[in-house]
Image (cartoon, rainbow, N blue to C red; front, side, top):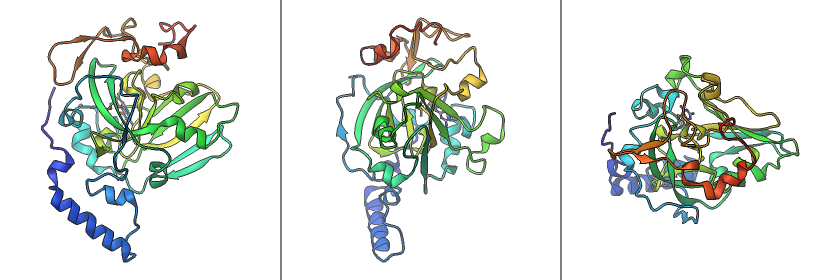
Length: 311
Ligand code: MTE
C-alpha cells in the first residue's frame, strides 16, 4: 500500500496567489470576457458555495482520515486499476462544462448545468464513515446536499422504483475506459427509497474544498451504509426506472457483488471476510458494524428482507 503526501490544493497555491487570480477572473468577467460562473471561480482553489451549514447527519465523532491519504488511495477504474492510479491520472478529467441529465420515469426530465445544480439546495458538511468492500475504511467530511432534493425537482412518476447513476466514460480523458476492466460506462443504482433517504448525499466537495478529480469531481454520490462502490463518481446521467438495473460490479462478478451491497459483517465476500476493517492510516483492525454503523437510520428500509439473499 502506497501513500503519497500530496498537499491540499490550498497548500499548493498560496492564498495570496489564488485571491489575486480570483480578482483577475472577476475583472475579466465584468469585461464580458468570461462567464461569471461561480464554478469557474471555484477552479481557482476556493469554493462556489460559501460556508456549508453543519449537519445533524454527521453521526460520528471519529477523526477524519487525512486529506492526503484519501486523495492518494482509492478506486476510480476509469483512470486505472491500482489504488494510486486515480491520483496519477485524474488530472486529465475536464470538470467544466459539466451537465447531469435526469430522465426516465419522471414528469420533468431536466438537464442541469453544474452551476444550477450547486444552487438547488443548501450545502451541508457531513462527516461520514466510508467502508470499501476490500476491507479498508475512512472518515470523510463531504460537502453536498441530499440527493432527494434533486429527485423531487424532476417529479418521479408512479412507475419509478429504482434510480440508476451513470458516470462519464470518455476515452480521451479516461484512458482506461479503452480496456475491458469493467463494463463502461460505470453504472450504479439504488432503490428509490434508498435514493430518497436523507443520508444519501450528492457531493460536490470534501474537506472544505471543491471535489478533487480523483475522488469523483465535479459531482458524485455518497451512500455511507453501503460498500464504497455504490457511490458513483463523476456522474453525467441519472435515470429513474421501473426495473432493477444491472450495475457495473454485478456485471463484473454477479456472485460477489449483489444489488444491495449493504455493509454487512455477517455476509462474507466470496473470497474474504467482511467482519473487520482497517481504517486508512491505522495499523490495527476494527470490527465492521452492520450498515457501517448507520443501522438506526437505515435498517427499516430492509425490514422483512433476508439480507443474506439480498446481499
Ligand atoms: N465510480 C466510478 N465512476 N468508477 C469507479 O471505479 N469505484 C467505486 C466508487 N465509485 C468507482 C466509482 C469504488 S470500488 C470505491 S471503493 C469508491 O468509489 C472509492 O471512492 P473514494 O475512495 O473516493 O470514496
